[in-house]
Amino acid sequence: MKKTKVGIIGLGWPGRAHLKGYQASDKTSVVAVCDMNAELAQQQADENDVDAYTDHKKMLKEADLDAVSVCLPNFLHAPVSLDALRAGKHVLCEKPPALNAQEARKMAATAKSKKLTLMYALCQRFSAESILAKDYISKGELGDIYYGRAVYHRRRGIPGGSRSWFVDKKRSGGGALIDIGVHALDCAWWLMGTPKPVSVSGMAYGKFRHLGPKDSNFDVDDSAFALIKFANEATLILECSWALNLPGGSVIQIAGTKGGASMSPLKIYTEREGLQIDIDPEVPSTDAFANQTAHFVDSIQRKKTPLVSSEHGVQLMQMLDGIYQSAATGKETRIR
Image (cartoon, rainbow, N blue to C red; front, side, top):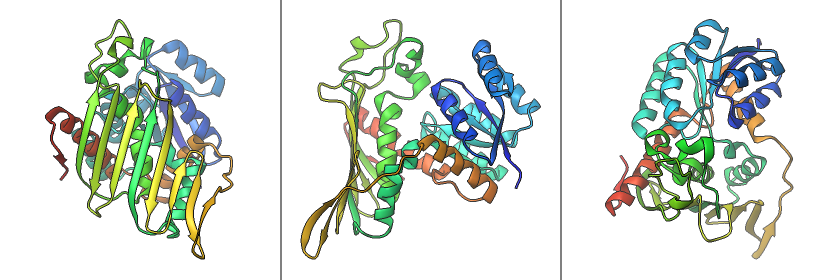
C-alpha cells in the first residue's frame, strides 16, 4: 500500500507533535508544512526536508497531499478544515472540534458529502492508560457503566503572552472548559461507551481574570463544573480549571456494577471470589500522538470510521454548548 501524504497546517507545539507522530510511521510521508510565521515554516521545512508554505489554501492547491492536520487556534478549526475537505483532503483537526456544535455539524456534513475522513485530535483516547482501561471495560470486567468523573485542574495556568486568543471568546469559543475540560470530558465519555447525552447542568466562573494577559479581552471562564446525563441513565461529573485554589492535576474515574477504574495512574477496583481487590496494571510506554496519527492514517487507508469520529465531535460540542448555556441561564439544558 502506498504511503499517505500529509501536510501540517500550524506549527505550534501541537503541529510539531503531529509532525513527529507521522514521522514515526512507515505508512506516512509528510510532504509540506504551513504556518503564517514564514521563518518558523521554513525552519521546520528545512529540518524535515519538506516544502514550506505560509498560505494553507496555496498548500492545498499546489502540494501533492492526501490529508492534513489542522493545528490552529480554535476559531480557525472549522474554516480551514472545511477548505481542506472541499479540496478533497482527509482532515485530522486539533481539539476542540469547533467553536460550537453548529460549526461541527457543517464539518461533519461536508466530510460525509465528500466521502472523506474527518477525525478530531483528542489524544487522551490514545494514551496507553486509556487504551488499557478501555480494554478492561470492553471485556465487561467493570459491568454496566453508570458513573464517570472527569477532572482537569490547574492551580495557576491561564494561557498568556502570544496565546491571548485563548481568553477571547470570539476566537476561542470559551475558556478552561473548551481548552482543557474537553480532554477530560472526551476521555471519560469514551470510556463510558460514548452514550448519547440528553441534558447538562453547569456553572462557569471567571474569578481569576485579573491574572490573565494584561493586553487581552478576558471574557471566558477560568473554571467550569457540570453534571451530564445520558440516554442510558449514566451520569458524568466534570470539573476543570485554569486557576483554582486546589492542587492541580487530572483524574478520570469510571464505575460500573462489577468494578471501577481510576487514572492516572491506572488502577482497577474489582472483586474476586467475594473479595475486594485493587489491580495495578502494567502500562506499556507508548506515544499518544504517534498512536493518534497512526490511527488516523489507518482509518484513511482502510476506509473505516475513526475512533474520534465527526459525529463524536458534534456530540462533544453539544455538551460543551449545553454547559455554557446552562451556566448562562441557571437552568438545565436539554440536548436533542
